[in-house]
Length: 253
Image 1 (tube, rainbow, N blue to C red):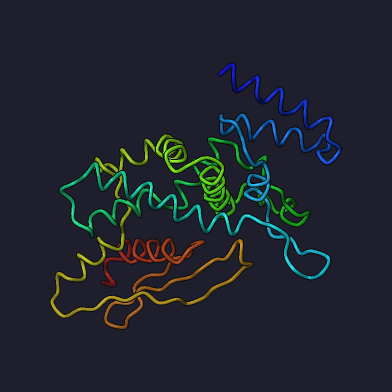
Image 2 (cartoon, rainbow, N blue to C red):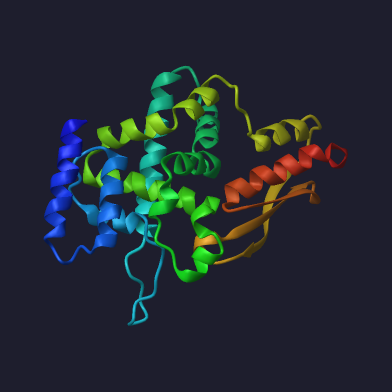
């Protein structure tokens, strides 16, 4: 811990002498250094991880977290998949997928963001600040995935795995112990299959909002009859909520 503190102190002293790092950036550098707890090799990765999309003067887009979010989503999925695969060697593919979807979801990522207080590092435009973007679940979840990618690129897979498994420790334990089961789609499928020949399908009804805060509305149909709807920041989330809605209206099934 003393080595980390010494590194942060030396790093900040060096940057104060460099005019390309104004005082407002020093707080960001100090905060990120404390957050990750290891010697940062490329601070620009973390700037990108916490930067929302912004249009540049030439009409293009400056660096933003979307590319890192893309990579972080894959890294996160691999870490969790690798862990539950080794921990639950007796489970079949479908069961492993169900557990992973319970762990890797917007709600879990939002809890990580709140615990790490990531909102304070996210760079927002004026409009997003006014609308409370730093507290929005979808933005916080995306920022966590971008942070995971930044740590992975700045160190290695083993190191980022330690962080992810620590952050998701309670969620993983709950999922593996079957204490948390929000897989409404599977529950609904079981109910529908009680009557032979019945079919179930999910359909996108509407899609609204900007790319970074899109809302999907999904309808679930049993034998072409709408039995439930759900809204979410991803199609998977909306499908789960649609299934939950259908289960709560069991008279329609």
